[in-house]
Length: 144
Image 1 (cartoon, rainbow, N blue to C red):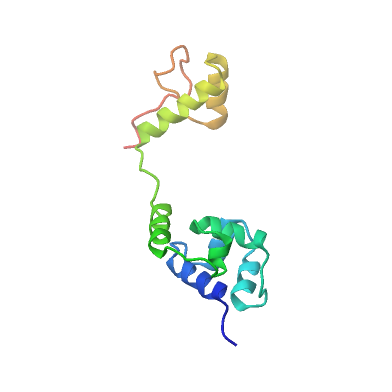
Image 2 (image 1 turned 60 degrees about the horizontal axis):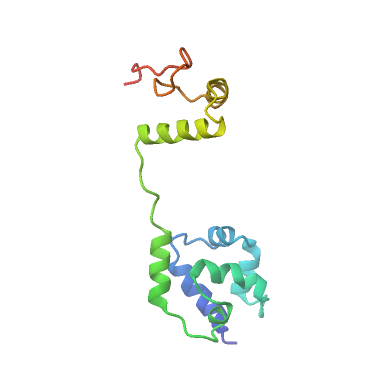
């Protein structure tokens, strides 16, 4: 028995995917790993469109392309996967701290009491960037 085009296409996509693991790919697509495994083994020989749609979306394809009924631009798939595998931009500690403080200020609507409460709950140090909050988990330079 010859594998269906779907099985061959799925295997090629999994080989190209930076996640590499069937389990990781299935979970990233929001389907059960066992469902993907059964598709690849042929147990599910004619999966429903709703089962294939999350996989198609991951690779920027249509369900018809996954089934082998329409042409696939493999270079476009490769580019899409390389873009998806790029790590997020690195941010230094000060940038992260500023982002956290901005979020706290936004959530607290700028109320000093609410900002102080949130920073204590989240155990985030408050520095001089937040006027009026003296003595709240001031950072020290002893950690160097």
